[in-house]
Amino acid sequence: MIDFEDVHVRYPDGCVALAGVSFRVPRGQFCVILGRSGSGKSTLLRTVNGLVTPTSGGTRVAGTRVERKTLAVLRPTIGMIHQHFGLVDRLSAATNVVCGALPAISLTRAALGLFPERHRRKACELMAAVGLGPEHLRRRVRDMSGGQQQRVGIARAFMLDPSVVLADEPVASLDPKISAEVLSLLRDQAKSRDATVLCSLHQIDLARAFSDRIIALGGGRVVFDGPPDQLSSDHIARIYGAAPIPGAAPSLARAEPESVS
Ligand code: ADP
Ligand code: MG
Image (cartoon, rainbow, N blue to C red; front, side):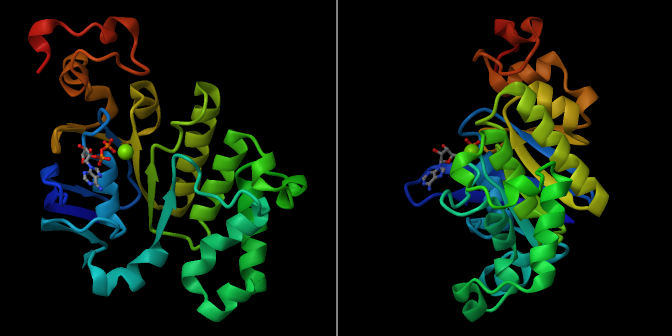
């Protein structure tokens, strides 16, 4: 469903964010991208929706190469969930959700806020599916908790029944209990639609609990690719070096010096 083919990204200032990344994510997989800050997770996700163009190599979605001329067709098939929710604070939760349909309606209708009835109905259904009741529909996003705001973010991402959902550190601003609830909702929504998810995380325990597969990046390269139960403490030490490991058991947090690369 998503193919990364020897993706290199070098930013104009010379920073090499990705140094040859190749892997394929099959349809319906919940794939977590793990790695320390600066390892290239966001850059990798952004090559999928065209916000970053590889310097060489390329990314394909359902066989179509992501490039300027294919973006108009691809973007409505890709949902996005952000760390800081990416919502319009002063608008209601329901309005934010229905805005997930913007890529599919005309500019004129969008400017006038004229969403078809089927989109408004769908927004209500999705809000219910992520556990937000009728009392939340008209609530302004700025008056909602972080966990509620990310539920709005998830509902918005699924408005157009995307085949791919990109979630860039979707729980980095939430406490551990709410993080697990939000990831569980994201996984359930994706599984029920057979949507493919690429989700960057830095918490190892959450990656283990929710992923079908973990890809770890280090220095712009894939340093681990496998099912969560194969991610060993040695792998973790290599991924995170001697830095404190978020979400790791205490025994894993102490990397042996000789195993740190
Ligand atoms: P992560 O999401 O894992 O923290 P990023 O993809 O954001 O990693 O960044 C990877 C590397 O690319 C980092 O060294 C970062 O500083 C650099 N980088 C990211 N965005 C830009 C940019 N727009 N211009 C220059 N360098 C960037
Ligand atoms: Mg990032």
